Length: 381
Image 1 (cartoon, helix red, strand yellow):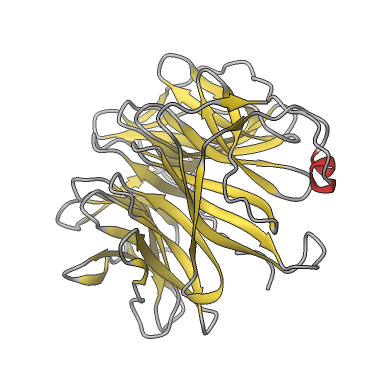
Image 2: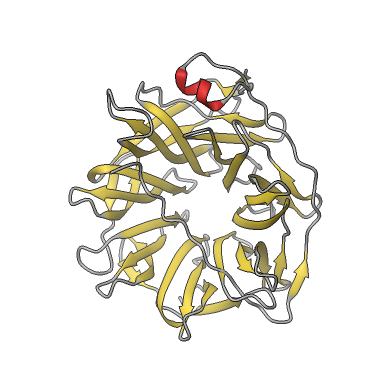
């Protein structure tokens, strides 16, 4: 089967009478790139790349299948994601240095599951298929196992983020079949967050310890827009980089938000949003496309930038801009994707590999792994 399919979350929100425009759009910042000698790098273009020295890379392996993907890492270095098992079914996993990769099972027998986030208490959230074929949000912990979080009255729900106070965010269908961003509180009661005025769907993707939520919602214009939500302010439109789409994917304790947006030329670009500066284009390493997935409390951002054929994981910092993440070192590595970063500078995601002798672009598998960055790293060109 080709590389690991990432189950992308799409859905959107509506909150009446609480729409606030929180954005200022900032000019785009060009990525920095450069020529390399290999055939793969020639396909990426002839721009200068920055790389970090002394990065340690570690692959997690799989649950017995071909591929795996890590979605999130907590401050204890525990990572979660999904892997094919020996029956080629996706299963949620928890990985740590001592135990390795642990199969978290599913809500219903042999059905598939996927873990999306883990807090510092070891509580894992995600979603699992049930016997009827619908997906249900779950919370997992070591004592209780996997718990079905229910829905807003519809058939499906998914959990994408949780914080250290036990709050969980995601999406759920209503009894009428509409998709809504939701928040489960510490008692696991489900709360609808709504949508932008005139919108018909929404999805919440992350929550910080201050209870601030980010995600995306349909707008009255039909466009999808990144949002910030808090109990005080309701749902705020974070705008775009000049195009017709944006999605917010992560928020740190300072309220800094990252995600992706289309620019005026229609290119997908990673962004950083702050209250002071609004939405800023983070540039690319290769080509015209990038997306940001994670940010830690010191403002380090991770994601991917697309070459002609493969994604390349990046780290972004304020001093150096976008930096290519390397470190796995295998000769079969043809791409990578960074999904989350913790406050210990541990980054998780996956490394894309091709079988020996296979043509790049075919017979490729993603293997979950972790990059560990030194506290005082050096950037080279």
